[in-house]
Image 1 (cartoon, rainbow, N blue to C red):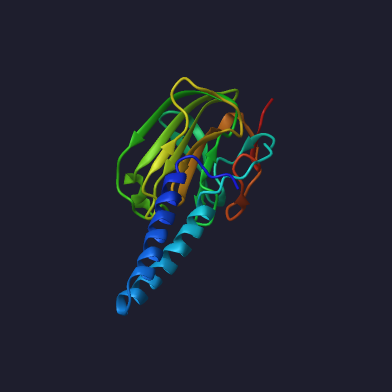
Image 2 (cartoon, rainbow, N blue to C red):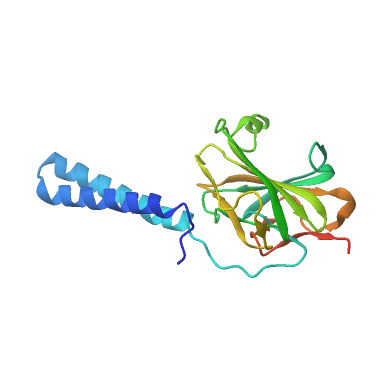
Amino acid sequence: MNIAKGGLSWIVVSYLATFLFIVVSYLVSGPIKYVSITISALLLIISFTLVIFFRDPKRKTGDGVVAVADGVVREITDEDDCDVGKCTKISTFMNIYNVHVNRMPLDGKILDVVHYDGAHLPAFRKESERNERVIFHIKTDMGRIKVIQIAGTLARRIVPYIKKGDAVKKGEKIGIIRLGSRVDIYLPTKKIQTITVNVKDRVKAGEDTIAKIHD
């Protein structure tokens, strides 16, 4: 199983802590021994869970505009964005069981990558606009688009894999939100032929088509 960049250190620390408490449980006796065994078991469960969280499976790139994130489409709205103009925003919410690696929706050049520090409120709340986020400004064949990674309650660190000036192919990895949260993509409305997903649909990053564009 491939492990996502940015996740290996968490897994290693968790397994080292597990090993430490296992050793302690063998060296002590009495109540401390039972406490150490309990902590070891909990840490082992956490370690296995982190492996699942940070898995990075291979993906076959889909047609059209592909999903940026694994998860559930929670919102599709028309917006008038200051960077993209009149556009359609598609929001995908990731839970802790989804793959957390995000992928490029189209071939394009990265115009800018901007990181904002912020709060860690639930990503489905209006107040999440104040959360930590990373904004990718991207030049593509359909014009300028924008992708925003938004941290949530559990997500404590967004790790971009790409930088300003990079030319990135559709389906390539662009970053990770540790322990899930939300990703928004803004697509210029006049370039969209059709939106191919609905609210509550489940999508896979890099693989599932979320929109078709005009030739």
